[in-house]
Image (tube, one colour):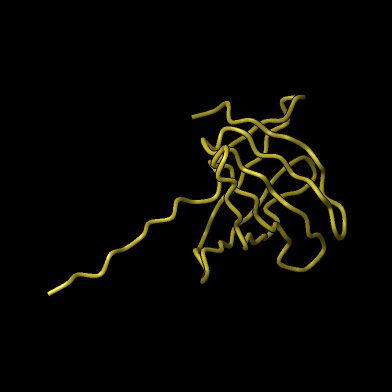
Length: 110
């Protein structure tokens, strides 16, 4: 009898990052959603525990980075979040709606 294989998908990012000015960003992933999406919260600067979701992850085969659609659950912003293959660098880019800092953050905490 054949057994089903389960693919385990890691959370999109590590939990804590800092930008070039040592401003802390936390990404707390709360629940996995269908089609490998996630619900979570982001805190960064004046943004505190803003409910977010990521979806539509696209993997770059060259460097194994993933680019996700990143949006506020209330629809106040929509942009892309590029996560390095080792998850040590996250870059926010291509703001399509609203305001969210287009920054790069780095994992410097365990």
